[in-house]
Length: 640
View (cartoon, rainbow, N blue to C red):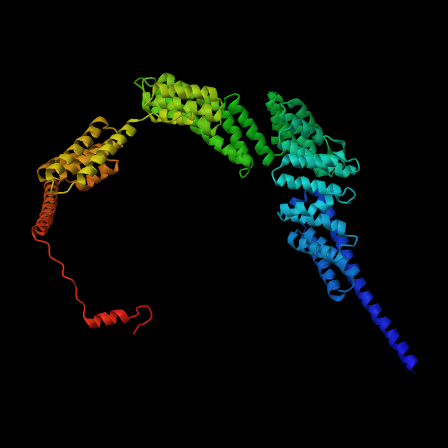
């Protein structure tokens, strides 16, 4: 009987053990199945968009990864002591987080895997994938540290991927030469797969292209292993290889390569772009008729697209810069803007169209003015010419046309020094900043310094040449003289009132200094400020109040735009349109009288205090009780 019961219990234990095993198999089977399905979807997605950094999983793909994480988590909860089962679950969870782009969570799971399951098969993959997730999480230094066990062992299954990741890290660290060296190491090792070599060629070509090493970039873009890459990467390699030729000014060869790309069936969606680039390259090669044919083909076959917008823009640019047919250029720019208003070329076309319209309007104004029988309006003419030069320079990017316009201003208006100075400096600045001709710019800057030594243009020319600025304008000289006069005024104000003769004399010296500033520099703002100080000096004496009012009126009429002119107008009530001189005079006299009374009162108090004998100070006698209180009172603790 006992044996029967024992056998029954044993059989029941086997049943429950079988159920537990079935539960595990059910969870892991579903997790692996869902992971495989998500992997197929991910592979299909990356075939169309090979750059993983620009591609994100779809909602359905993410849902499958979420279920993998859910199933794996159940395995961890129910079978924590079975290391083989939990290791597989942790790895699948980490991979799912990585494919979802949740790099931080993936890193945590990979760390967990290394801590508890370092002896299991997936550890080699974990080493690389953790370093990759750290890179994607912008933890570049830690990623480089995590990558060391991968790139230090050539037998590592992820060795070549590790070198590629190392090149990415070097590129992010702004060390392109180290990135190139890492990829060259991949190509130097013959044990790498052809596909990995193709990847290395593609990355190397991109790095050389950024460094503008067109020959090396083209060499890698044309490597035979590139043919093993997906469609998107092959297409990019072909386009960049053609651009290398264009950058080397081998325009016809570059056009031929784009024509070959145009015929590839896999690149059909890029055909309009290839036509546009062929047209642009033909313009650069001065095959203008061929360029027109190709670009007009784009306009007719792909109307109202971004490609037509760019095509019309190129046609307009040709008419503007090569034939100078601005009316026709405006027509093409209009068509470009209408084709795709929100695109980059649409916005540029609108700006150029508006600038050309403004240019033509200004030219017409000047032409009409010169055709008049009477004397033309020279001021308006040269103002328009400056605007035309600015349009050429800043809006139309026609530097040479701007320089020609400025040359014409200098020749036609040699009598007007102000206009010639402005045009001469503008021409020098264009050679310096826009044409990059430092020798010519230096020559023109020195000409300005020699011909116009005491001007703002000479000062700026010295600064642009890196010289010590020694040129001084009338404003600079006036300020220096004004500061000297101001110091004299300050000295006069600090003399004691009991020395009135010295006070009057000091103020008179300061007044003369201010007057000399105004007399020598009447056309400067500092001269206006000096005139204001003259009025203040007159206002200090009752007998000179009439003179103060006259100076204030002169100041407000000659310098209405300066702060001192506006203050003078306020004081003389000119803002209200009245000539209330008598009231102004009365106010000033009253103010002076009040000041004199106050000064007399202070003087009286001063002399009275000087005539009294000094009082003897008696020692203060403290009572005995006070002494006891003082000695026993504790101010720090006794608050009663």
